[in-house]
Length: 358
Image (cartoon, rainbow, N blue to C red; front, side, top):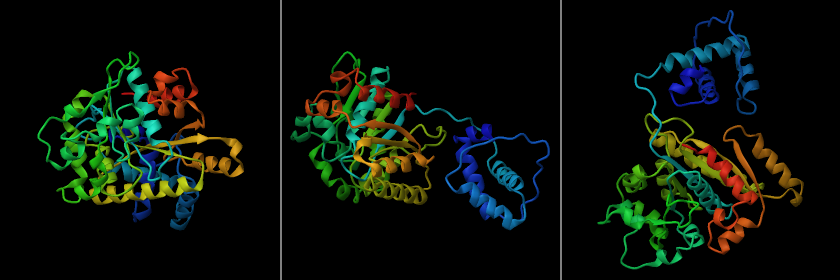
């Protein structure tokens, strides 16, 4: 099961969940041989084991037999692929949340810096119309230049030049000319309207960024604090492409330990689900990051953190304290790893970068 799951770009937990869900809708399954089988284990969503045991009881089969039937069904429906999986040339990640102010820009920038510091070629795309990332890295003036092409123009097909001309490099020995920014532009506020007139708009960002992909190991998108077509294009861009491994590209969501973040997460998850269903694609959820956490804010904050951590899918990748270094670096328009390379914030970014290491 583990080998077959890997061949299809999945981990054994996801494959088992898919197997059980298929078993629920199947009927007339033959008895599976379980004699001499070795024990094994994997994590399932909260409540799933009890639900599955109840369904086995209703069908008059043991829990072991029901699980064996589910796995056999999945294996029969997922034979070894004729062509091996290949690792994608570029990892594509969006840091996304419908809620503003939860640290998308802070995390996008910090993780990108840590990856570049570790030797990877990294592009950060400021996809937020507000342009906080562009401003905090010291390039705000680029947002308002006249008579220059923009990312939106490359998305809607009106650009005449090369998208490479939009990029700027972040200085500093630490990044070794490996860290580049695609700045925001003031026409980004009209992106939803413009995209509504573009054929197959979901792929507009992919068409625009495709000429850049060979130049980078990782492309990180600082997502907008909104839903709609703008978000759909970014989610479509980070989907799992044919032949790519699971959980390499995808979505990282920063959250706070409060109820508002839970609501925002549900909205984004719903949009992802709708896009995947309608577009028949797979967008992987790499994980959640609890940001600006301070246990001194009371019992409800602690309870909300525990609620996030109880979820096995997507997993919590890190809990980041409410520290000053990130704010000071942003206010000073200095990259975090240049401003405070030995800080706790910087070390967390390095740890998160390892999750995306290529």
